[in-house]
Length: 100
Image (cartoon, rainbow, N blue to C red; front, side):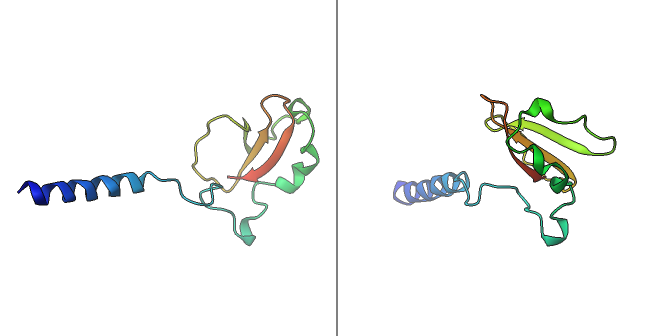
């Protein structure tokens, strides 16, 4: 009985470990398609890349923004209409904009 139990446990353990392995890509969960490319109005705010986050205008009513530092934890839920504004935690310089 022991002879069959050990390989079965090893196989179950290997499957559990493989399920926790990171996947390739590492970006948005659902990257925008061509039709969704500017649903969150990234083109409107491109001029702020490279500037201090304190220079951002007030968030317009009806828009959804997420301002987050590049090393801060954030949820991975995807909302096509939400503008993600990512800044460097040390310099407060805006690094990138994305939908999600």
